[in-house]
Length: 229
Image (cartoon, rainbow, N blue to C red; front, side, top):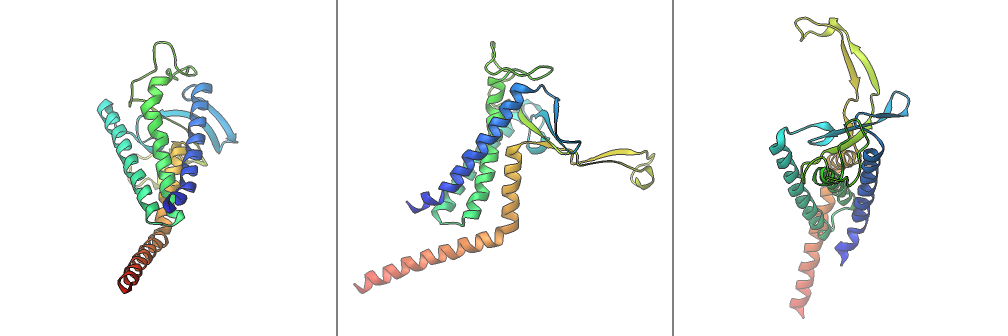
């Protein structure tokens, strides 16, 4: 089928992203303890092992119920994105649009794997390197695992002077770091996929509409030829 050929590149991309994402997360879990940091490039780039209960870039939805709700929402969102990606391929959507949604899909699946299974298959990382499939079970239960983050880029470290803090009643110098969030490959994949859709949405959806119009014209022309016969 033609639409399956359109999916070859997106499926390959999904596989590669998931492979890199999970390989790096498992390496971090089995080689570093929580909070440990390795410099990649001076004081500007680090592998900094942290875990979070919630969303991308360390944002959280608190409590056990919040964690469960977020995990279920992720799974439903992935099903929806996967269906939409399949539907776009059947409509012969532009390859760029398929790649964008494939990146979002892969990133979402990558973080779902952490939150669904890591609590079951890994021991805790506090003060020690985690063990995989430890005796006595993992540090949590199904759907209650934590997402592994590791990329930290504190590119700018400075202090906000007290003199410009007009919002503070009793100002004092405040340390400021850019960029503070710690993230992973899956987060980056989601962010890049969304950014591509935002930047090129007019081109993507214009091509999709033109393709749908062309398909409709071909069907009408075929019907006209059949009527003549």
